[in-house]
Length: 212
Image (tube, rainbow, N blue to C red; front, side):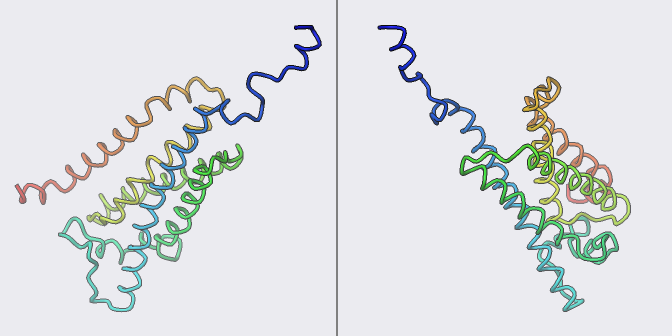
């Protein structure tokens, strides 16, 4: 084969060959699936909270279905000032935020990678939401004295969304720290769950021990 033939020969993997980065595409879709599922769960919980809040406004005697006992009680939390910290019910924030998460998850499921700006925008929004969750957790545990079950669902999905949304672009930027933290992202989520559970057990132990 001549030098000219070598120049004219097609590349083994053309730039537009979808198989070139098949592993990356799978990971992108897997991350999109995670965002979609977590966002949908959060959206469902926010919708349930919004519905119960409307019913409570219509009928002060209404008892939400998630009023399970003196500690696990949505109704006890809904009537507090902390439940409308911005002047409107907090679940409305969840409806907007989780809808955005689902939309971004679906986009990634199609194989489309969001721009770096969109990824960092999601990271910033998710981190702000997780910070809000920490404030609400403190208020519920040490000021209100009750835990809203639907709120716990929102907290449980916000943590992984925030952790993964921050660590993923950080890892992709080439940071060794970001890559190291990304490799233990599941452990970070589990540790956070355990901390919340331990705090709830300690704070309401006087009630939990009556159930033993």
